[in-house]
Length: 364
Image: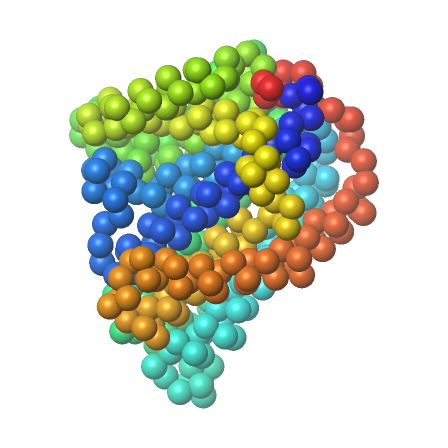
């Protein structure tokens, strides 16, 4: 099977499983945050939470798939329409759900007072630019954390990465010869921004670049690299096992462990994505629930804590919230996200190119 096939065929790749795994890691990490404890991965490594690991996986896969999408159909209206239809319909409904359902049920204010506050309507701007506002008036006032949907912070980075792919594509930087220039530009921006933010020592600047918010851009960049150079990567069970073991063994060694883990994770993800294990590759038969899980998890977890308190513990918040998150994500996919994507396919039934350029096909 060609490299292009394993990305197209959900019966042979494990991308749906990896996306759900990333969402579950974020949910697990937030469950600890909501009750005031550190997750086990952070307690061990000292820098990496389960949530950060999940976000890194999301951005790496996004970089690979979004770049390939552009290379298959390098058209401005096609690219923008597809990206908008993937992000905004689900996001808009999730924002309305927070304002109209979660807020009134979780606020200490009366319904009349709640809907009289400007902050209630300011939250709606998240439907256009996510992360604009995290709080609703009086909502979750007695929870350890008061944000209604803190997970939205990553979506502006995702949107900016889409813009970056568009600009890089127009400038013809998404090819093996030009990519090093793109990599230097992106890495220079992230490191330079950390240096300007107050980093004094080079090691501290590099470390913060890899563990701070700038890691979103860098993981996305690694995904772009995997798309462009994928056929040249020796991805197999032996190399993935070696790289993964090296990353784990060095995880607690400070900066060295951070750097090694940063590059090891994408390598392991690529291997798992191509693994033809039945229970992994058939994960998405009932739909891609990962985005719905991500955008609904935070308010639903907060709602569990609001009603049951921190006494249920991180495990209780995790398990009970999943009982709400999974069906909600299922409805989001089948009633909102999937119809929106179907609209995109009707608008643009055929890509400009039948297949992406050979260099854009990750190794099988």
